[in-house]
Length: 358
Image 1 (cartoon, rainbow, N blue to C red):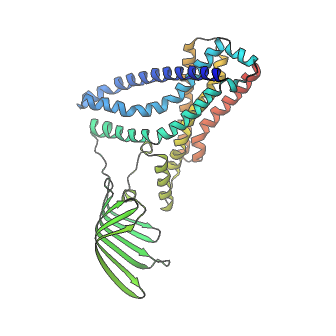
Image 2 (image 1 turned 90 degrees about the vertical axis):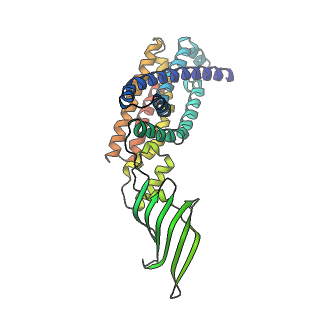
Image 3 (image 1 turned 180 degrees about the vertical axis):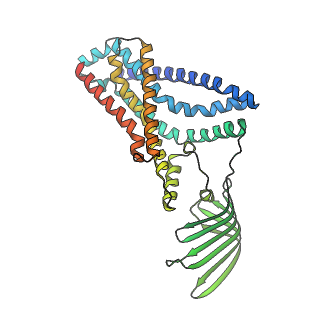
């Protein structure tokens, strides 16, 4: 079985490499012809345009891999079926799922990898792409990562700042008011400046005032460090693009919104989709295995057309359910995972029927 598994795996990976290369080439050509005219009109440099192409590629890669995986499954399993190797292996008592086990295992690895990829590499590349395309090429005004006259209530404290520099996690004109269980003022900390690092605020020109056994005590400090879990940038009201946030960042945002009494329905949809979308790779492979056996006698161009059509169907379903989730028509988790469940059910039915028919 090791020889068969190795043979199936190599065949799948070769087909996957070919599919990714073809789709990547098509996307690059489309991107260039679609946007090059805009770049010339705006007078942007060609180097910036090529850089935008580079930083947009991880996003395209994340989108095309499910379709490329489907095409690779159609090609690799289809070749086995055309050469009657599937029939021979089935005669020896192997099920379709056992024959395709190396491909399914590859799909699991790819799905897990892209869960990591989408929440690390893709997030950073999306940020850089936006900065280059939107602000350097199209010359839109960049929204400053700053907050002015910020006031927030955090559990037993009232936080106030004149200016927050989100890029450097720096506060100017800090006031922290401590409250007791009856919401009475019992402490006040002020600082000319404060810098956040590793869960602590380093205060400069700080004054601490507190009630201690009925006495009002005031202390001054040139420099003082206090525990402060939140980053100053988290207090700035800037609407971030979910594509530029990781799963953990969106989860933290949802917690902050819930504590502030702000609805987080849309953010929850994006959070669940961060894991649902990479899972499509495995589901597309499962869908492609039985379909490849059924269309084995057709030309490979038909498999290519099937993969494109199925890809459009899948991403159409994803867009539909995400829109329903955003409009609160369905629950966030349901909106993110329902397309996967539908296609997984179709794959299971096809595998069962193909198993019975062969």
